[in-house]
Image 1 (cartoon, helix red, strand yellow):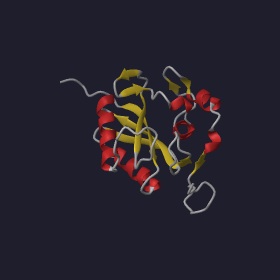
Image 2 (cartoon, rainbow, N blue to C red):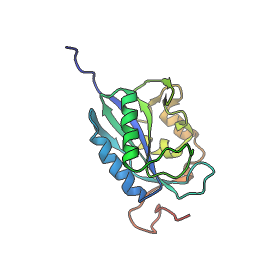
Image 3 (cartoon, rainbow, N blue to C red):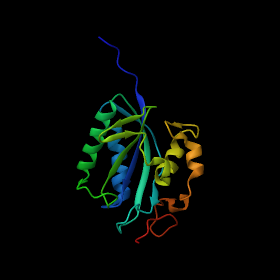
Length: 180
C-alpha cells in the first residue's frame, strides 16, 4: 500500500455580489474547510471591490483562503464548482456578471497546468487587486506565482488598489459596501 500524498497548499479566491454577499463568502469559507481531504490553513479579511466587466451590478465581497489538500487539482475544482451550485450559482455563459458565489482555484502548490477548464496559476490573478491584496494578507510576500513572479512584485505593479477596501461590519461605515 502506497503512503498517502502529503497535502498541497492551494489558494482559492472567493467572491459574491448577490443574496447577502458577506454571508455567502463567510459560509463558503466554512464549507471549504469541511471539504474531504482539505484543511483550512488561512483565511483573509473580506474586501469590497468594484465589479470587473461591462455589466452594471453591485459591488463584490472578495476574499482568499489557503487550503491544505490531498485532492488532485481537477477533483478540487469539481468540489469548488459543487459549492458554487449549492449557493445557487448558475453558469449560463455570462462572463463577469453578478453571482451568488464565485470560487476560483488560484494556485495549487507550484503547479503550472493548462487543461480545458483549468489553467494554473489563474491567468488573470496578476492583474486583479481583489485577488492579490487578500492573497498577500495570508501568504508570504515572496510566494512565487509560477510563471508570473513573486507575489510582492505583482502586488507592487498593480495600479487599481484604490478600488479595493476592507469590508466593515457597520452599515454606512468606511469600507461598507456601496449601493451603486
